[in-house]
Length: 235
Ligand code: ATP
Image 1 (tube, rainbow, N blue to C red):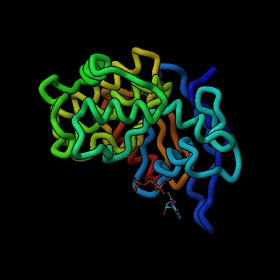
Image 2: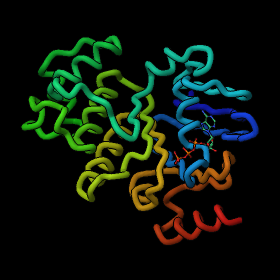
Image 3: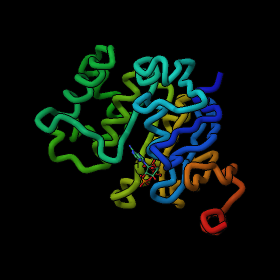
């Protein structure tokens, strides 16, 4: 069974066909980058996978759960990192993780929380610090730890590297690779072609809601990827 299956998915907002006839299958451990300019339909796609929007046509399943019929079931299988991961500012990293894991139905002790935070790349000195002062990269690491605690099958990332410095972006790549090695499928919506080349196994280019190209990332170097991307947006 694929971890994520989108079959001929379409959704329109009035006259705007935000996503049109999109099919996408991700296997366990596969890292897929969804590329496209602003308005291409990336966030709408993620919102349909999360069950926040219902497709007009087509079907979406997350590790067997139908995102439209069983949005809670689909969400239970997903670790979702929006552009800014929201944490409780007055709770520490450990407390945030414990709290969000509990909301997801998993009771974890402090030792497990520490282990998951370390696996997600958060330095031990930050485990007890209040999340209110965390950088975007640190918030993401707590978000990944929450996904690990939930035993998510799929990690969804929306513009994960925007606003990250080079070191934090590199940390994120390592965390994505580690998630993939655990069998978690990863779907990232991004503009960051360099990062795509660094971590993705496959990539798709969306333009005006339609998939206009799909490739194995290994077949392209970063310059060729940029050329392909510009070409697909122009043609
Ligand atoms: P960005 O990189 O800016 O986030 P995107 O690829 O994520 O862009 P979407 O936000 O998915 O693009 O938008 C796709 C299209 O659907 C756009 O034309 C947008 O204006 C439209 N759209 C998205 N959500 C709504 C909504 N709730 N109501 C009306 N139109 C919408």
